[in-house]
Image (cartoon, rainbow over all chains, first blue to last red; front, side, top):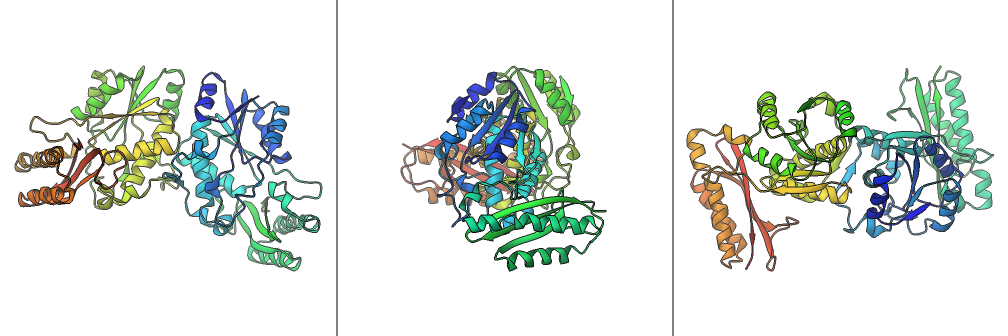
Length: 278
Length: 278
């Protein structure tokens, strides 16, 4: 496995490589990431994993500085998975002009759901992913459904900007008690960790109501949010949306997704669950 | 020469083609465009020319509807030049969602100079060029210095978004009397056509002052604009800027460019001239 730090060296390697499936990450890899890598292996001769903590997608007061950086452990895990290349540029390599002047600007969806609480986040994601796509030139790229809104935005930008890349969604990895795997889970205290699976349980309850025929989406949302608040959470949102375009769910929509973001202490967790109406 | 109308067919052709130099155009080709094509031929096995009148870069009240569409004549000229592929998609092929949702957003420069008079123009240019780059996947692309601000913006986006494409600037083609070649020259009446070369003469005068040592950039700008107004022009701007980043020219800058946009009757003409300080 090659660990490559510069764009030039990555491009040099790319010239003679066959097909490439790409998994962009911010490192601190857990089983959820490794599931992306295993899926990627099915789609190309080589898997390239990028590890880059992207300042552009962090807001003021967010955890950019404390975000765990664990390159050596990450590389060991990826070598075990048969990854061809780890691309780990430093900030100067990706942002040589200090300021990123040209940005990929997503539509209004960037200001909803997580975007409402993280201004500029999805612009930062769309921009760095576009950069990485242009550097890695993959044939396919894997994104986790855990970051459902991010996946929708990546799909949209690939379509609208005509990237010739197949986007492969990968199901969310979960702990035995249902908690979605996330680098941020390690910020949880023991008692918070014990409480954390409630988020997924509320998503499951809401999905069960919808599967049973309820179309009182506002009522379902309110009930779930209230249950979380009663258990000590601060709820950023708990919303039922159209599964493809993430528009607010309407009567007659067949495929929905329930998305939630809520905080336990200082840790912000997100999760979601797709559901079909009857 | 192939005339290709769909993205899929273009990508199919691209798979087995060698290197590609790309010339994006809006058609209605004149000698200026053919100079771009001839330059492109020096840089790759194949030249691909796109012809697409891009609605996104036209403002309200601009000449999108009346912009000349002359595909057959354009294709004949390009065949004579040994072009490999003309890529001529229709609007639905490039904008299947009616609205372009994801845009490439240039920095504040997009609101200066021509951008001040054409809101959204450079966002439209940056977005369609990014799309075309992703579709054509060229090794190099030629842009005329006639559209100097556009060239600066393309260079910037290639750098910032890491497109692996060499941008080749090509000198402005001119009529014998100095008028920069432009599709919009055909809108000029006979008397306007006779007057039009004054724009370039004023650029030359300003360049001569700078070459002779003057650093009174504001004075030079005012004098040139006044001369144009006296001759019946409406002047959008006449400005001296840093040749690379297009920042307002400052004492000590070595490489400058003088840029102008002015209207004769209903026709808006632009031109520019690079100059070195002493």
